[in-house]
Length: 479
Image (tube, rainbow, N blue to C red; front, side, top):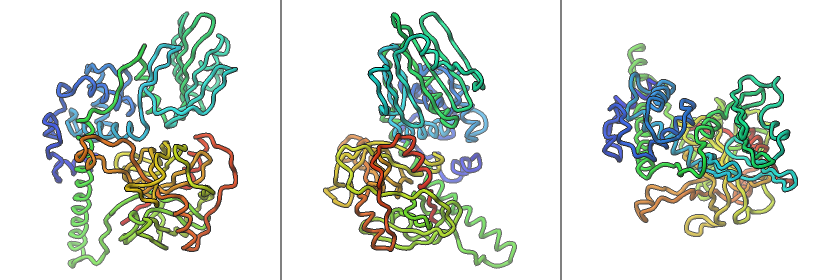
């Protein structure tokens, strides 16, 4: 990482001006005085998400915030010494993406009179009799309950055998617990209301510590001020990502020249080895048990080499009108195959999207949720439908499934926020598109693959959908 970042800064012009005078020099030492109060809170939220900041999101830039940024700098291996504007921009860009993808916002829990920053929460279970609500989002489970003292204590780890680490606060009118157990991470907050206890409890897998840490840092009594990226941060992030992508391309070219020079020096003649340069990456998902994957045509067209999980793939068919492509990976071992819904997605129905967005900044499969916001695409296009599930570059070709885990679309594009903002003076939020599932099924039939149809009509829990998507969705590299 340090070699890549240093190369991008020094060799390929990432000291170019970004859309804010305070960040005009990427190599200059970062100065928090250039940030507004709300921007400092947003940066603190980003540091908490990165697992290096463990204090309140109060907008006060003290030694704890500075030390956290230095630790982030070291963690990412960006710059030696004091953090620069480049470090801060990189952090801001990562945080803007995370907030966009998962819709982080403050939720006020009136029973305990606290506000907590969470990904967009969806109720997955509710009981009027037992007095609890269960939410899920972004790898977190959230329980909100009203219980007597004995039952309240169950949220504060009665089984000590599973506890690896715990930090507890026990007062007459409130309890707080944070613990790591064999099964994951727990953060519970309970307060006494006359004869009962109101509890908000968060559960996460071990690999979701970053999100849970942001939740814990965000807790504030009463109703908290919103936290989100300022317009300046959005503009800076978009321009920064463009510069980063351009720098990566230049770095690939420079590395290609260096390899050619070394080969010529060693052999005494120009190298005959084919030049390989990554042109794009995207997402695909399994549509047969024999290694057939469906993706977008624009992901795989004009590729000299296709790879999935380090296995060579071949292009079987491509349709530029529908923007669909069928690829084959003979050596791919996959047991989970996509099933297609027997009817189109309804307006405002729930939808879940999986893919591999922004591989330079994010890692691993990313799952987001939203709804069908229009049954037609841009300009009344009947091939596509509009969805609100957040997507980013790299999501292209990924599956969009309904609440039963059946494919209802193939992610194809997002509206260009920069171009629209320049035209109308406002930034569109979560205006994204997917090719309709019926079109995808037609394309598969035309090319010799019989799509598997959904037979189970039972709604699935969000984590069940994520598990299925994880098993059938793949990262595609195009060279």
